[in-house]
Length: 470
Image 1 (cartoon, rainbow, N blue to C red):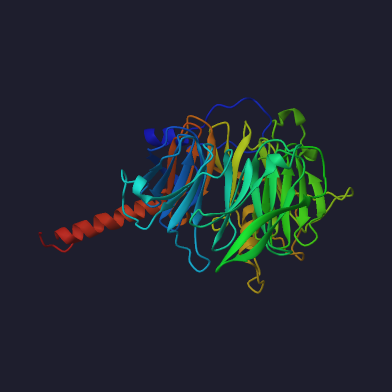
Image 2: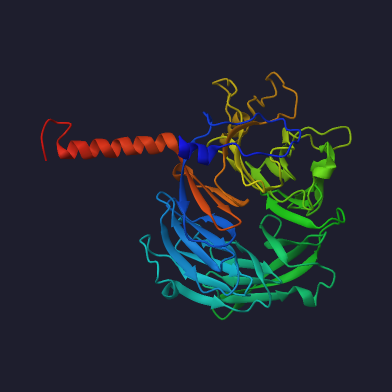
């Protein structure tokens, strides 16, 4: 009980108006009642990337990336060699396979490294021999990596570059020599392959940039190059904080102070604009960056961080008299400090939020809506309905919107604020903090069942359950 109180105790919070119920030691809707500390990083973790069903990787400001075993939490290898913080890690896959045989890491040291990961066995201490290539063509920090297809990778930072999966350069676009007004490096790159093959990039500028990717044949291989086409239509003066794909026809961008724009990938023009902070009852609660993240689910639903809270939108949902989208769900005081990361877990129908108050919280509905067995429902829509606790079928009895999701669970083990989370399927939930501390949260019931099976096998093998002795 002492350990349980340590992990799940309620932390004192400032007195603010909050519509969620207090959560105490008894958390029947929280599966994550066991925790494993993962020792490896010594500074803030910037990203957790799932490599495959058994492994995940982390990128940290301590200048390393680490590959972990998802089931045990054991450290498989440390990828060291960068001379600055590792900003991101990219699993490299073929179109036909979910297996990850190599990864790329990017850093503020202006380099990208390509690592070979052929074995799932531990090879800690032999990191250097698995570094296939050190890429040095960038002239500034590198913030993001995106795999465009089975052969091409795009990197963004001070420059925008195209590579093959081995790290060989196709083309480099020096932004600062062309864009005199853009502020800061690229922080997001989004692939476009509907209207044409290209990318949209976002920096701390108020406009998105469109690039075409052109192909030419050099000897026996294709050569790809980047061509700046134009800025997309201006939709405000606030810097863009995030960029995400919704479907093959839509993508979304968000500005620091709450403006969200839905874009058509065909016309590359805005189709809807709305402001998530318009409903904020106390705008003084807003931080410098109101929207830090958008997550799209099922090509239709958007989960948006809004300062200390979050909202959920249906991109084809109802609009108010001013033409603004009405949120399906809204909880603007979900934490006592700004939310740093959110992640909707479709298979469990709950939302994970992490914040500067050091807490990780689970949100949803303990009551699932009744369904007509004849109603054909897509999995993502069913997950959204279970999360909200309502039936979204037009014929169903309506409930007033927006829904305020309930607090299902809270995990308090991080001494510093949590920077990122990653759901690892049946192996649990990984969380990482500003101080480099990582926790692998496990489903307590499943872990107890595993231990019971192991004990039963041991006793059977020893002869205690069969009346025999070993």
